[in-house]
Length: 83
Image (cartoon, rainbow, N blue to C red; front, side):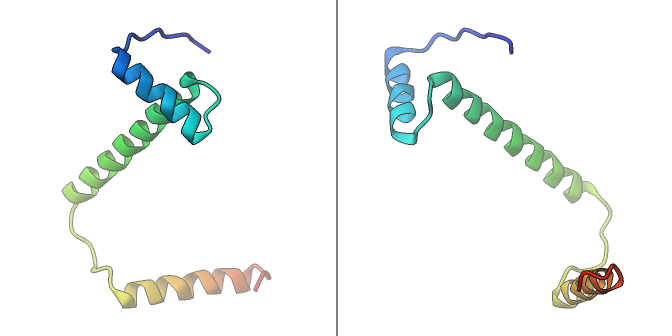
């Protein structure tokens, strides 16, 4: 694991220390790692949403679509012998 040192103003360091204590993180590093993971996940979701918005339109996703999807899954489960 690599090491990264960051400098924080006193007010932000106090905030981090509070979050570590209140939210059950073992260290400030664990708290910061979690924030970075969440930000990475948020960015990946944003990228997927933008990609989807830019893609060509497809069939409408309505109740009938989900009904057909459920039937497909049920058929797969029955065919595999797990239903």
